[in-house]
Image (cartoon, rainbow, N blue to C red):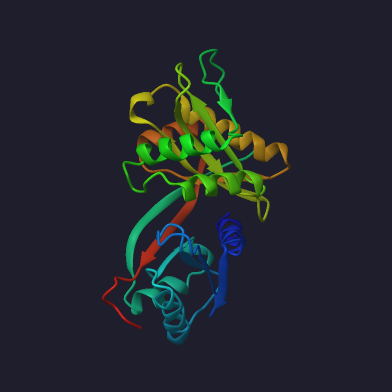
Length: 255
């Protein structure tokens, strides 16, 4: 699964507004934001970069005023991490990823399960963007650009879903990328603090996963942020498959 997930990461970055390939890496940039979560690189499966390749990659980030940063499945390209560390990259995080297939998907069956919807209006996309900003504790601020990215995901072959509370306010939601390499990434699952513990995350996760399977996608994968969220995903049918490594270079380091 590591090779498939890594091949997906490459294909997904190639969809970015600006994508470049350099020294066995693909780097994807979004000129509309300097967020490191939307501007990063990943290696081709099996890549064996040299120090010169890594220096060229760092230069591409510096030219654009972006933090040199990578996300990848290390087992899919074992020669990459040592070369990056030799250039001064440090570990941001190591995340386990979980995978769901049509045979393991287990949607919530409770009659009280929240109703899941697809946003259709600018107001609904903006409300979901604001809900996710609150859910993630201010890591990003709600914005017109964020709402537009959600709409592009839905209209570009991915999927976006949300849940309302009893007053009609967006309680939370999530997104799923367009499929590539027979898999898709489910991300940004967030619930406003006041609505947690009510099945919102499980409902949107199951709905998004099912929507990908309905299109013929063979699997969906995601990363989790804690044991609580892991239990939610496992109840829906996700199972551990591998790890992803996050590396970045501090602004002080130069190639």
